Image (tube, rainbow, N blue to C red):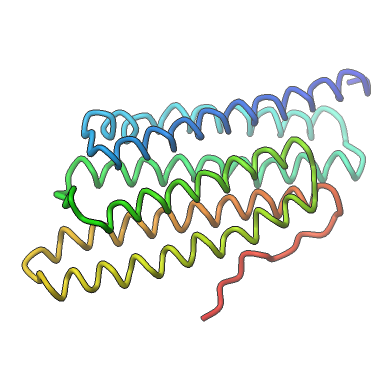
Amino acid sequence: MSRKIFDRELENLISQMTDMGNTVDQRIEETIAALRTMDLEKAAEVANSDNEIDQTEHAIEKLCMNLIALQQPIATDLRVIAACLKILTDIEREADQCADICEILTVGELNTNSLAITHVVQMLEAARDMFRRAMDVFLSRDVEAAREVCESDDIVDAMFSKIILEVCGIITESPQNVMREVDLLFIIKYIERMGDHATNIAEWVIYMETGVHPDLNTKED
């Protein structure tokens, strides 16, 4: 494979991952809409759409393997391909979290009038913003912007802690509805993980540019 062809295939890899990121971002938007309006039909669509994302992931993995197998990449190129494989996993897991949230919506009995629901939606919007910015830095390779994405995870984590306290208060006041509120705890844990995946993407972008993989996703006890 000539260098020109290799560069074209590398560009194709970045393009396909960007397209997958856009598809996952759409899933997050649909999840936000389903959660805000308790649209169970939309939630079911998202919950059942995960196979499409999985198939895309496998196709891009194959492309990465072919790039490595057909030409021994130089160090910088190999670093990019390796980072893409890691980022690919985090993009796919963002979609998994959406499917998990929407599955809870379809089988649970959440209190649509709960103030906690409003805060959960806001938390998901914050996680989506992190993901979108992470995909932006994947294209721009802006290391400073990538670090800012990682710092934003503190906002999502703070919202996570706040909602836990709210839900615990609700359970204390209405213990008969404990299972309904527990569903909210599962949902916000999934959203918290979405913030972590966005942080992971940003960290791998830093690795692509610097050769050093920082650990900016460590949680304090």
